[in-house]
Image (cartoon, rainbow, N blue to C red; front, side):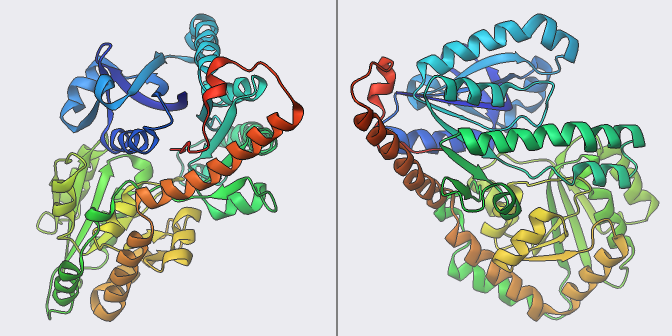
Length: 442
């Protein structure tokens, strides 16, 4: 059976034998295929073709999947950077044709709502899958409902863009979620508020976490004890970390400003990543005379060396000015790093559920600096957060969540199989006859 995943991720085809994509996503696909090896002949990812210049610039940080070995293949639907006019006038007919072809060949369709309403590949795939009687699984990775307000209040959007999004685009996205909950066999939401608002009382609607690490990448007891002992050393310089993209909405400049507003705190901020905001961030460091307290680092490939590196830090910073649900959150927990963050829905929810996140009012640099000062001067509070972070990571490895999702998926497949038997003989497509109850969703 073929398992089709339609997602707006970018990947670079390397010919018939493989493709390159973001490292953690490549690892995720590899684990999924491993767990599905007895049930699925091939996992097919349909997404966006990465531009050659982007591939060349980031090749060393990308993960590569070898199709004959990994049994994961890539179907490019359209090139990255394609304008709206070209998408609809030149590409849309062939995209739909390709989706029809791929959905018809698959037994399970894995996609989600289309946040980008101008490129609705995901919801189209789910609609085709439901119409053809395939098992459909929807995953919503992020709760975008506060995005318009946040972008407007930070001055990134004009009033016209805010009103258009709030009263046109957001209602259309709301309709997608309501339709998906009614039509899909299994619905996953990353966010307890989404589950409460759309799935209350519906057994096929589930809340999920989406970590990318495995159990052997979580800090062990010996290293944890060493970390806790270091945090209690008098006069220790607190080692702060941010890793990820240097993009405006990540709020990295707020982290720098908070450090500037807490000159009495002995701390060093390490920024690991790349992005268009890096020159502006370097200028801000110079303007605030923080050259001795802020360091920039090249990004690292996701894997053992990466985890070994970040375990040496004490606290992860997150100051999102827009809606964000980064996987770096769980990688931080696995490395024994709690998080200081703005109280967006994502981080507020994690604070409630894990006890490993300290939150302050959104977009308030002053309160952020105050809380940083508290954590620096109260090691007992910080050590409790570290313990909670590691405990949460041990309960929520990638494999643990895939196994949970597998159990829910088996229930759906068994129910559909039982329904077919009650209805009586029919002639489903050849691939559909091969669906087994051991199918595991990614």
